[in-house]
Length: 318
Ligand code: UDP
View (tube, rainbow, N blue to C red):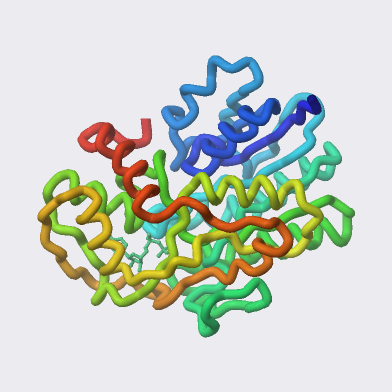
């Protein structure tokens, strides 16, 4: 079979580690690059024994070096939860801008195909619903989320420039809310927050009145969509996410049901610029990639719960 050499930046993170697994599973050789500021070696330790897996402890915003040829570069390095990018605003801006530049430069030098992990945050607090790829978004550049949103918007522009100017083969995936094993319990996102609270018997912290909506995709579905996009000929951004939309209050109740916990719901202030609605329009993914999500919320939540049960009380970021 045709073994490819693949670099995954942010490979020790939540999504990156699942991608490392998938590419190894397909018989490829994987270079997992991470500076471990939000990723964790624990996420990839089960892969280390595989001779086709290589861990590179490097910061993608510095000059990056990978020995030998590369066929694919997948740029997934970035803080990705609101708490992380509020704590690491400069690193978030740097990895989306300088890091994307370095990863694109590497792809160009190696003649590799490049895939950018972009985000539904490029749509900001959207005025169009559901969000299609043709929507340009409603982002506050100077708000607290601006560091992530603008870095990813810059990253998309840089990616298109490398495609148009240098002829690099590029793909852009706009990732909507995704959940699953290997999220960090302390990353502050709704799912790990609610599951951690339910497992510890604490109140579930719903921000605002909980009427804001999100649409949650299980990680295996997302990885399948990304894998198909990489192998497709599509050069423009493609949304990958699950269109099943719900309010955050409904989501908190779904977590209570799956865990069987009897915790209260405690309302906390809504963070600044928190998008009021979010749902992907996945028409392009359906037609171009023949992809759609398959894992029902209840199944995905159960698998994630099984993972978190073993982790509550253990130190994070190890
Ligand atoms: N949220 C919440 N309680 C929490 C964490 C998040 O109510 O403990 C809300 C948050 O305000 C947002 C939604 O859940 O409306 C999803 O938040 P998350 O941080 O998971 O991702 P986002 O989609 O905002 O990037």
